[in-house]
Length: 239
Length: 139
Image (cartoon, rainbow over all chains, first blue to last red; front, side):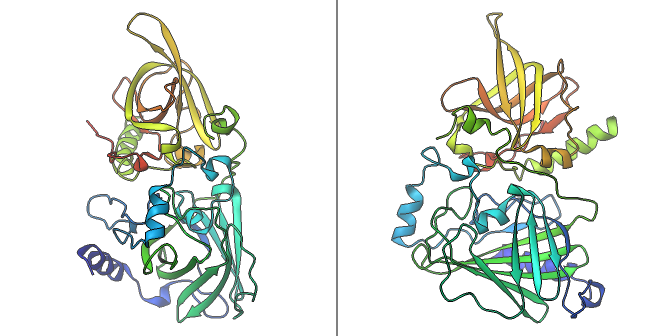
């Protein structure tokens, strides 16, 4: 465990308010409803820089544990050849979480909806105890189910196609990708978010990224049409 | 106006350390080794997703004028940082620091805009996946 994580944990626990001060839904679970500012993560291995006196809003694990396949795939990635996001195709689940544009969470006892300003898209996550369907179709955003571990919301996502990258820098994944996210409302205005990537084809062991989301009660999600004035594509600047 | 300038300068100092993202990889189109400093007059500002675009007439050393287009981040994030479609009206004199397109055309990915009075606006682009780039230098 390196110094950065120790600093982060100390800061996070220092910032934590008594759990009675956070809002809860009718079933007694912490509520994550609201518009959240999320940190921009173009490279999930790295940590973001922090303003002086604060903890970075995003902490990465450092060098990723690539398998030989993963390393070769990453080295061979060239966004000049084709960058799917430049064509406004779906970002994929992890990259959707990596954008600097806010998201809104709308939470009911058995269902949680996450609305993303980026790409103006959404995901509904059932938290009624169900598991993933037996034969999951591979999709851009994967199939998500949620469950509670005490006051921690755990989102489990599988069933990804192989058309996306984990982040802007191009870290790879295969269809074996399994994403687990853990959300904790540490105080009325902050959410501790932890994402763990498991993909035995690309990485020899799982790795984790930790972030802090900040509640923005005065923000509303704005419209975002990726295709509207996409000069890169319409003027032929990207392939 | 002075207070706004101080707020913008302060935000720019922090935000420059965490570059904001273009919806695609910087490396697909722009060259981190081709940094440009464009001094000129705004002719048009496109304040439409997915990117803000600033068109400026740049006076060349030989007296000719070249029109450049500079890509910024999404208007949504710029707006939340206090930049609006009225921040860069036609006729405004600015200096743009950024990176030129790989194909050598008169397009750049903009990092900062500096006004004649020294105020800086951070345009918010994926400079973080440009090798060797980090926080924009603040004078």
